[in-house]
Amino acid sequence: MRQGVQGSAAAYTHSEGLVPGPRRPAGERPVIQRASVRGQILEALRTALVAGELKPGEVYSAPVLGDRFGVSATPVREAMQQLALEGAVEVVPNRGFRVVERGARELAELVEVRELLEVPVMLRLARTVPAARWAELRPLAQDTVRAAASGCPATYAESDRAFHRAMLAFSGNEELVRIVCDLHRRAQWPLVGGPVRHARADLVADAAEHVSLLEALVVRDLEVVRELVAEHFAGAA
Image 1 (tube, rainbow, N blue to C red):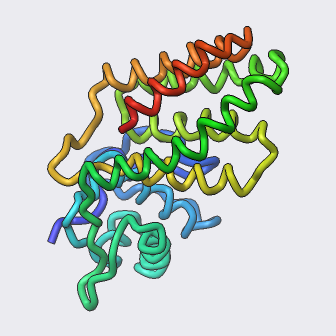
Image 2 (tube, rainbow, N blue to C red; image 1 turned 180 degrees about the vertical axis):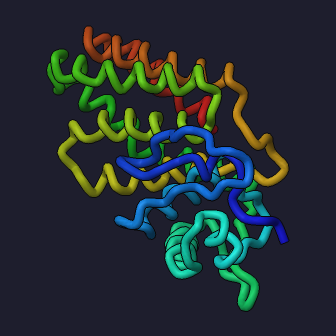
């Protein structure tokens, strides 16, 4: 059995999503603050999924993962059960949790549902939200550029979701934001047999689309907005 979460995932702590922490010396346990331990473990495991450190088809036990994080098996088991509800892992009786194997078809379906929900809302918001409000999102767009430049898929995934979440929040529909955020997170999980990490160039290109889209929204160029939104989702699939 593989020995739990390795590498970058253990160097993350929880705030609003995941914030990269300093690398720890080899063999040293990650420091997990006791406040909201389950939440921190859940976010660290989500990071490990995106980074490819929890591999599709592999089985991981709660005690082994708990030892890696320096906590008991209980918060790890609770976090894994939440991931099972989200469809990321499945319970293997008396062994632990297996990371679900997803193929290109599942990803395409998730992206299609996101597109059906997000595109009409984005086009409506492009006509109704004042330019000054869109301009407020420039720091988030730049965050995605910096995250892409880092080459870390987990860091980029968090900033990517934050940017999309902020745009959709202008709709005032919290249920829509929650559902789309969940779909977005699931679409970021790696595919079985696929690359463990997205190429840095792909992340940089995706982040550049965020900046271009935001600028088109600021000047209310609806035709460019429509084209960029379509290109963005085509790339996600």
